[in-house]
Amino acid sequence: MKISSLLLATVGVVMVLFVGCTNQVETIIEKQVPVNQAFDPTLGLMTFTFNHTVNGQPFQINKSFTDASGNTYQFNEIRYWVSNIQLTKSTGETVKLPDTYYLVENRDTLYYYGTTSAATATAKSAPKIRENFTVVNVPLGDYTKVKYAIGVDPTYNNNFALKAGELDVNQMAQVASWAWQTSYIFLRTKGTFVAKGADPLSAAQRFVVETGGNDQYREVEVAFNTPVSSKANTISAVNLTSELMGLFKNLPAVADFKGTKPSGWAADPNLTRYDKFVNAGSLTDMKQVADNTRSAVFSLSTATK
Image 1 (spheres, rainbow, N blue to C red):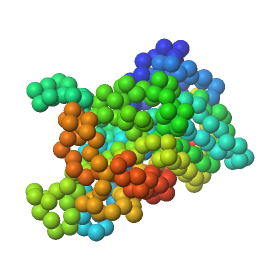
Image 2: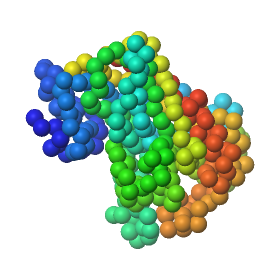
Image 3: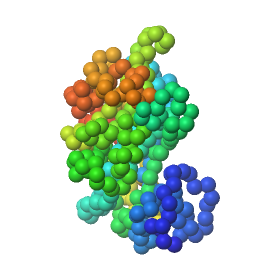
Image 4: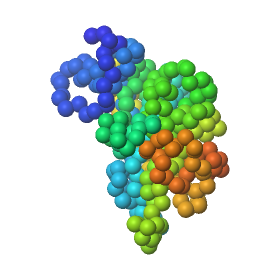
């Protein structure tokens, strides 16, 4: 089968099991490999899954979560770029996987930029959960750790005309302003915060936390507990935990967020109602969030051959 002719489809769970490994690989490829990405069956495949949690509990859109201080959070979006994946072999050799740019997200409905209240029934993107992706053409060998970035490297971030992997600024900007004028948005989460003991009806604060800009590009390194083998025409799996409360480590209280509300948000029905921000208008806090992605958010769940 010529894999490059297959159409990209939404990542989902494969509901039918096949006896032959080739059929299983083809089914997953049909769901996850872009049309311009050739598949070499003599090489391996590796699925990366990001299991989102809030204070150790499984993430769920618009569910109330309590932090260690008794404050309540509800999230309606977590989105971030995972890019430039590198694997380290047991020999110490580093293998860079080219064109690895993937958008991970778990979010509520988003409306297209400029949508009016009269058009919200049709001009929208339905809720979406995309927490895993499969990388093809992984060189054979035993791997002991993975390194990846949260964000987009300067080569592509400085030139929106360039495309690689899933990078397409035109598509990103159409829904919920998913790009700044001078940068991709590397990560965004948004939702509602209620301080311990406060009235949720009168004291709720709506927040948006974002990172972006070349200075906020961060690499994350995660070691495997046992080596993960890449074998021809075989899928291995790396399952990571992504703890959202880690994003808020060493930040001020939500009430003290000092980021600014971008003027263009008046045309964005997804963002007009928010009043507390961490973004380019609060560089110190935005840098802290970026640093947190490196050290306080991601950890290994399981890794299997």
